[in-house]
Length: 346
Image (cartoon, rainbow, N blue to C red):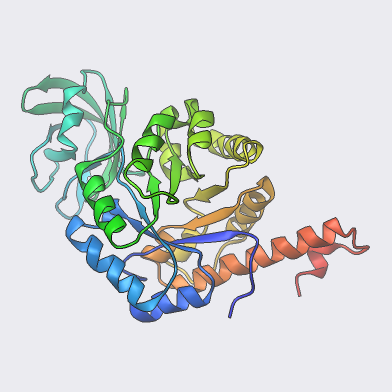
């Protein structure tokens, strides 16, 4: 059995971890919450996924909504967009190519304007909208890149989107019927967004508001006050603010949450190298340590446990980092007359 930890661990389930032995192993390692990401879980699979988890663990489940975000549809393999080429953007469900990309939700086109920038995928292409009509839009590639299926799309100026998709609402309904009492609201933009989700849940359920956009940062205090916990998603936030500012936003939001006595979690790229490798880098462990020293209450593992090569090893690595933090903090509180960071290493 695991030792009780001061920091919660939220673990995203996916192809690498939605297996009986892995689910049971994650519970044995003390994972506090299992996260089901609706952006990568078809609605038809939600009920079966919850049932599978319940068969092999008693860990609470959190449904993480799609929220007010834009995504591309299915793409053909190896699609690469080249500078200067036109690309048609459509609300229709088609397989994307170098000339045609599907965007959802369809309502994004209602507020799409000529001159808007469209960034597809984290390391993908950047487009500039040159024409908008009643069937979609045409854009020009201004920075080349590869585009894969179902990837996040950032549009500036940001389109007006509802805080929940139709799929989110149906998934929450299914989850509530099966006893799920944790919901994470993606791209929370106001306290009213949080209240909307709370209205769909039974009394005592937990609403985790994800701060991952400029709109969320601008109204972060009211979001923190309305939510039971907040989650800083550094990945999506880095799509909307300059990358070098993300650490400072993280620290500021953590301080604000601590001031308001609201639990705060941090997600994205904690152990990104362990998606493909079984050992973390020193920089990643240093990032975790500094995140813990900032005053967070939990760490969220995403791709590392959803599609990584060793989900159990990832949790073991995080657990060791938390244990080192706990022991180092205790040594400091007790003013132990020894170099604590070195003394606890063994």
